[in-house]
Image 1 (spheres, rainbow, N blue to C red):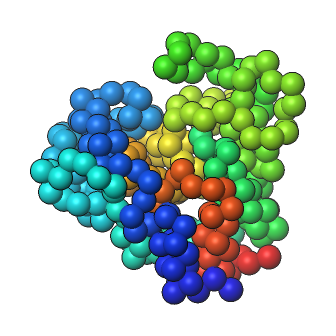
Image 2 (cartoon, helix red, strand yellow):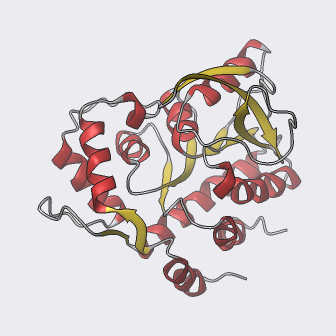
Length: 271
């Protein structure tokens, strides 16, 4: 069993909380771009409020524990592990309710090389509890704007977790695909589910465009986010996103498995 004390120690030793790999420069740049409504940073969210750079920084200080001083412009960022633990507890409550109600669940990630295992274990546990794990629009092509221009990606599912890979990929259903923050994959998945007459997800679990894109469309969504990704936290503040877990999202994939075990234990879904 992963207790809160053990997980707190793991978060700090693995660099998932405490001093993290994200830099202050990265965070402040993202906050400026969010305030300017840059779609690369909005990742599917359409904010209602007037979020200036200082307002975003204040929110991230409150939700994540980053330094609130705008004069601090360099150095490593920090995440308060107590905020991470509290958000994981809230996430566990949502999963427990989903399992009790046996609602369909959609999972997806823009960080498959880091977070696929984290979500796949959740998918297995929810499936064992009677939730249908949805895989709509598998194989569908999605045109995504990247820094290299417009690229066509294919929506795929690995162990029940949505991701994208190059449209010419030779191994659908194989190893993790491409990194993306785009909300277009989850939009395509939800549109396909609706066009087919359902079922639609009662819960979406994901990151980046998956959590923001689904939340913006009115679906309950939960998942992790780094301190240089303000959109999920703004979405939570405005009620579009249910739970956001502040955590460094660039660590080794195996570092996230204790978080999964902790959430499943708190949700009484341990396998």
